[in-house]
Length: 306
Ligand code: GLU
Image (cartoon, rainbow, N blue to C red):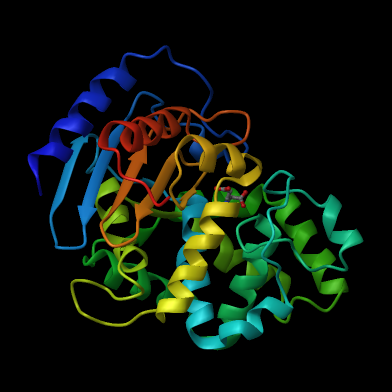
C-alpha cells in the first residue's frame, strides 16, 4: 500500500481524536452501554491484499447493523431479484427501528437496512439455510479471511431481552404475511448477527468483495454477480446510514454501512474498503468521529466514486 494512505489516515487519526467528545454510546441495548467511548480505530484494506491501520483497529466491537450487509449478500446470491417482492429499495426517511411506514406500505419495509427490512432478509436466510447462525459466521469468516470471528452471546441475549421494538416489527410484518418463520426464532438469529464482534481490520477485509465486483480478491470466489455487487453498493449509498444517508452521501460520497456499535465500513469500487470505529453516536445512530474520519478521507485523498 502506498505510504500515501498511511500518512493520510495517520493525520486524520490525530486530527479527529483531538475533536471535542460529542454524542453517547448506544444504551438501548444494555450490553453496549458498557463500551469505553474513547476507543477509536481506522483500517484500510486494498483489493491487492494490503492492510494498514491506526489506533484501536485490532480491537473487537459489536458490528450491529453492519451485519445486515452480509445477510443481504447471502440472500440475494440465492434469491436474486425475487427478494424485492418482500422488501423495497428506497431510503426510508425514518429512524432505523420505526414502525410508522409499515402500516401504510402493507408490511413491505422500505429497504433492507432499516430493522424491518433486515428482519425480512434474515427471515429469507432462515428459509434458505438449515443452520442459519452457522452459515452467517461461515460467510463472514470467509469474507474476512479469518476464523477468529464469533457471536458475543452477552450482546445477543441483552438485545433479545430488550427487543420489544424488533418483536413488534416482526409480528406486524407477519400479520401481512411478509415473515415466513416463527418470530421468536427470527429474533434469535437477528440478535446474534447484530452481536457479531469484529475489528476494523477484519471489517475492511470482509467488504473487499463489494469493492471488487462481487469477487473475494483473496480466494477468487465470485460471491455476488457484478450486477448484484453494484446494486448492493447502490443500496448502501442511498440507505446505509439510517435517516442520515443523504447527508453521508453529500459529505463523504462512498457506499457504506454503519452500526450502533459505532462502526462504519465504506468502500471505493475497484480500490479499497475502509472501516472506522468510535462508539459515540450522533442523534441518527451513526458514529460521530466515524463520519468525520471518512469525510476527511475522501477530501484529503481526493478519491471518489463520482
Ligand atoms: N441490533 C440493533 C437493533 O436491532 C441494530 C441497530 C443498528 O445497528 O442499527 O436495534
